[in-house]
Length: 458
Image 1 (cartoon, rainbow, N blue to C red):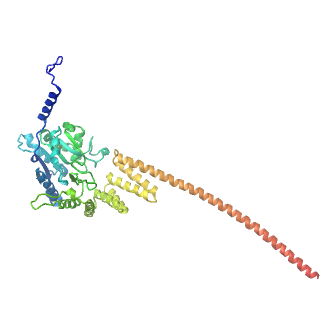
Image 2 (image 1 turned 135 degrees about the horizontal axis):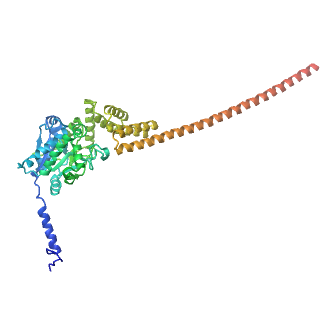
Image 3 (image 1 turned 120 degrees about the vertical axis):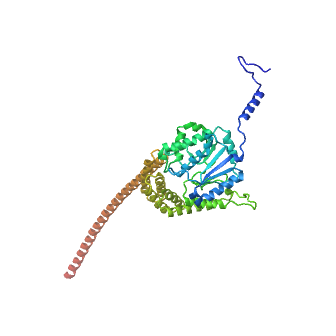
């Protein structure tokens, strides 16, 4: 009995045939499996980067691509001159996708992976193919990792979600081609983001915030370490983590770290990779290389406030608090408008207050520093919280000092009263003793006089 519903214009299928039909419909809609050579990793390294650390990072990433059969493309030309170098990625992506808009697309590639030149694969067993298949089967056109290095309340680069553009998965289609071109063009309209601390990432955040071209529903948010690192990159880098990204690190750190990572790749006699970087990574060795890199960077350029701030943190970890204090003071002097140095210096003062004897002085000075930081970034919850805490501790220590002073004054008054009473008692004692001695002398003199009279009478 197939059954016809009242007023229905189609037959009602039994449950099992309905499920089969639904399964067939889903199978027909599912994208075909992606082949490894349909994934391309893009790597941009102009000559100045290649002469520095680019040779090592390029080699590491190309070996990973070779191991899994992915296409790997190196772009060496300088593509931007009127913007910050980080804008290069947007220009290159727009250029790579332009044949789609021009109707002259002959590429087999379906998914692009952009990697900054300071990001490398460390887990050579990572299954990028499965991630790309999941991405391609979805309705998303972009995939970016959430960025934990920039607090959401900073008001600087973040919209509803903070994203890092150090690694980006892109679907090769018309929408993505149009969006990357719009991203580039928006930089010309938001010229405050062409140079300086905030650049292409900030413009992407603005586009995401206003949902330009429906970008929110077309962007997959990946976990922070799914295709990226969490700063500081060298602390807690797990073996399963696919990528190590040295974002914002000085050249000296990148050179030493990438050289070390490249040295961990071993090959058999036939050239196949036999050692995974993440399995051979020595965390202690990595920490030493990073600190040495920052020391070299500060020696080469003692005017970089970021280098001074990070190096101060490492000196503080090593127990060199006075050296850390000097570096942070220099960082604040070099960049009065940078809240990071101020927050780090205030934190150092707070730590010093907990361990030292000048608690009130250190906490109150920390409060002034945090006030400065909160004025630089009024929307920062971190600075506001630190300011409230330091103000409270400053007030508590001041009250403790006043209480101690009050107790001391009371004790001092009591002591002075005791001294006064003791002095009066001693005075009366000596006065009474003087009377006794005088009486004794008088009586003794009287006795002597009587004896003398008696002798004369005889």
